[in-house]
Image (tube, rainbow, N blue to C red; front, side, top):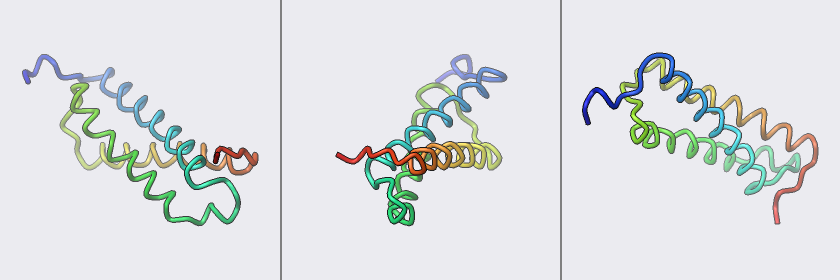
Length: 102
């Protein structure tokens, strides 16, 4: 891949932030659907596995889009932003009592 296809600068930040935010929200919804939203379900370690899967799935997606050269700071940013939006999404679904489990 040539250097011309790389996303740099402001566009890189927007792409990474958007994907992290969407992955975090999707992880929250999948967690609520797969594990449940009862107070007992909130202590399940499966929630962390779902979150970790959504964090790890992002990296191949970034390579396809043309975002590369992730340093330690970038990796922490991806994990933190995904975690934050997962936590907020799952908490809102759990507190409101939404039942996504079929």
